[in-house]
Length: 293
Image (cartoon, rainbow, N blue to C red; front, side, top):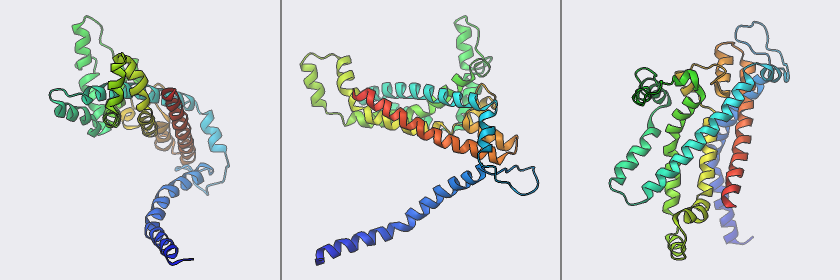
């Protein structure tokens, strides 16, 4: 082996050794909780039970799937993800198209748009519950009375929709920032050439802008899906659970805090992780395929 090749191999090995502690620490921090959850999911571990924890194989998963709250939590999780993605991406795209243009006060508008992203979820849920969606003294109730309609008790009549609106309000700035960054890298010469050829605004958006945003939208879908599967604070603060609004994350919480069943809660956590990866994978593929078509 020649000297330059030995030097490159030495530098590569030295680089791997330098980053090895960080990689090992990252793997330990992520894999250890996962393996611990896997271990607890196959043993009979209840906080109020005495005696040794017996190995029960997949019995915890069987009890989880047979529980009356599992299927509603699963469908509520899918419903929340679908509604929040539709609202946040639609509103984020509209705001990004607006902020991408030179408008008066664009800097202030950008600051106002991203501000909900920095509000903590419990605080956002309290604001929406008490100031906006409260049927007697909330803003929505006042607007309904002003229009002559009966105020809607959101968390009693449509709890899942109310929680989706709160989460979408928080995640719209994230979608807006990602899509705005992508719009700013769009080749303006393509747009000008299409407009010179007679293409209207809708045609330019459909055939040029939207395919350009395919990958950023897929990234937004993937990131939001992963985080929305662990949505908890909004449910806890507003409805406190129940079959109409509980998701998989709240199901794990209820298994631990109300039934003291660590085994079933761990099984629910593993199911939630697998479910998150499957949903994110298929959503990203579907969005990318439809926008690239």
